[in-house]
Image (cartoon, rainbow, N blue to C red; front, side, top):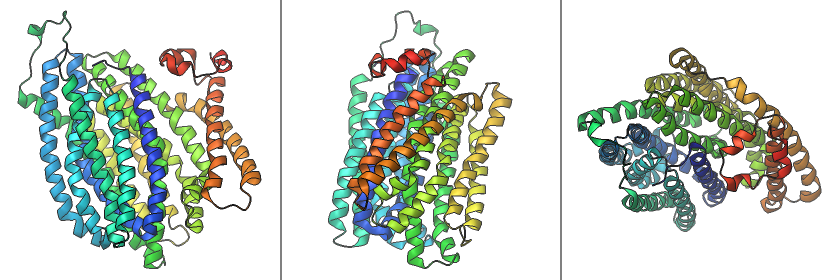
Length: 541
């Protein structure tokens, strides 16, 4: 198996992540038409529960696999790298089985407490998927630890294609029986997609499981590690990460559980409160589109930083941190600006069945887009701290953020004049708090430079320029092309054209202000650099 560079690995994973999220965005509007707003609220809460159980099962140990495999390979201990993977895979199988049973047991109490008892069957139907995904995440962690992101990327795209097709198909068929059955149908594709990903990764592993040990490696001098040491390392790496991500999702679940009751306290009727909760459910997939690219960056850079830290190569660690921060801001800042500027057309195009709710969603997205930047920076900080073994700092900082978020949401959402905007404010606070805490600890304990302003100024300038151009282009096209038309098909043309022009303007603006240099181009594949026009290359410093 050929190891990929960090940049190539990021490119492969981010491309797959974009495809996956675009499929998600394609899928959600159609599902909202099939299920209507009340059904969508039940579906959204089902996935809140699934997301919590999923991350408790699959967030920590797969990262531990990636980290350990990359460290042991860097130390040329190839046999223990494979042994660590097999131990971790067995742990994930046990954990996945236990969590599937727990999800079934908790389905009733959780759905009743949230005021969404109709979501019970869909939660139970989705429970076996947790076991399948535990196997999938083990193999993804292994391939990422070996520096090959392609199997993860292919499995993610295939999984999402199957999920989209079969979820919509079964939701459309079963909604004829009842709303509850339709929501269950919307979960079937998730199980089938995970099953495909698992089969593909197992086949890929069997074809590339053997290491070709270089001839100059003196295997006799390598100290082999007993199982108990490997197991201890897996738990030392995996448990804090699981706690951190699990608490974050638990906070989201608690937040979702209190949202409908607090909206009712604000003076809304029960049905209206559920429909407004569905608006927040539509907001998250939009924000998560650029976040998946940052997740791809984190997955690509973690093994590289871990490997460098394992052999005490501080210069390379700092280089990878700088690279991660630069890419983080280059993606997150224009994404936030684009979502804010085009919030109205995005919502009216994707969710045009309820125009009055689309306006509310666009208003929330305009303010909530800042979360994209905050989440991205926190994710990179988390990757840095995990790579160098400072796991519990991440957990503690996220706990504080979640506490502030829940308190903020509980108070603000019940205020009639604030309402749903309180949830957006709570989300901003949730990621601002750990960002400040993580920055302080990285600067104090690790001695690595984390210069946020250095890498954010140029993307901010280029994004502001892009935002103005995109605003002018879209609303000019809207005036002449759309007119009195309300159909999403008509609206999507100026939206897609504006996004395409915006991407071109941003890249060119970034080149003009020195955000992309010739040195950056050298790290990319020649296939990518050939796509960049010559007049842009000539402007590079």
